[in-house]
Length: 503
Image (tube, rainbow, N blue to C red; front, side):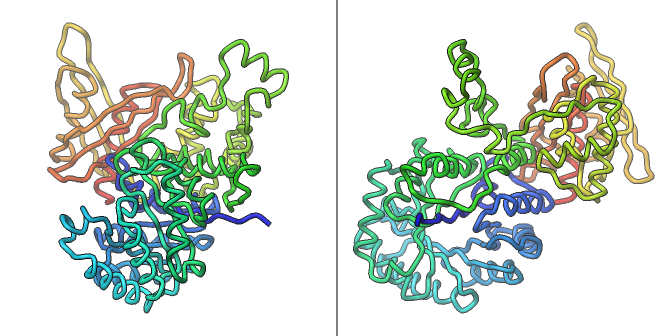
């Protein structure tokens, strides 16, 4: 019988820590629900001590998600562990994940602790977490640059203190696959009691080998892969969940293992993370990139038409990429609209479904054919209840290559209406300046991008803005879609401002 590998998803913790990938409470809950639909075994929902907002989000996820274990990260520190437990205590299945660094460079320069002091800290803090929670994971940060025999002592100490999962992270993406596998085997052979715990890997992608290293670890005895959707994470990112899972599923002849992931939810999860964070994946990204199942060369096309297996080792349907079986347009009814959303993997509450259908009918008057990507864009652009502090009422733009651009923007805030005018060297910047006057905030535009959702002259534009507001360090991401590029940009800017006020 094959082993079943646990999938520990840290999109909401390590992934969300990466620049430009922050999410608000409602977005985190939406992502957590999708991870539950994926049948992820463990969801690392955040780092509770980091901020009251993080703690509140973890607690909300713990209250909402029932099908996965909910985990909070904590340093080897009693206050951290207290905060972690308070955040996850109402989860149907809860885990505390505590860590301390074990490499010489970390112990000397960051912790300023001796190896014996680190051992004492592991013993005390794993036991401290255990008094709260039966499921305790311990990580030896920077373990791949740690002395192997010392690492075995650390893990033996953690096991005796009550750890049920031991994580061997490649924190800086330093290893190559064979080297990491040898390290795992050594730890298994030289750590008393290790046969009674789950072994985990958490690999960063600094040298582009995170997935390969994780899979090499599995072949050496790793029982749990820690990963993120789309591979997002600090620096070069983490091991990509979809790549690890599809490698396991596609090459059962090599790995001889299973996992519990519903692979048909992968594309939906990937699109959701791209939509929420505003960080797109490369067209050549394995599994979920736009070109992952595209065949342009004549030789490839001929082969695929004759038999898909000539150039496809998995099918688009296996990862949830939908077939566009129904053409939607201005005459399509609500029933066909709802059916198509369900086929795309969306399960919306009545309020959001009503709003999305309204936007669909408006778009259908402007576009002859509504494609799946249009629907996805509409769903992502509909704000959750209570999120719309400001809404766009109307705008007038006067622009040209020989005049100064001006924008007149009118927005609503509840029953109040505000209208301002501003001028600048371009119509979009003028519009943004007018909005700044309305909200009376100092807003710094960190990044702006504009993409076509689909092809064709009537394609929707998707605008993404990243904003810093009132001198804060946090970056909020705003998103807007429209067949008009200026309207999409204005909606994105207002969306980002609304997120700031909700947060």
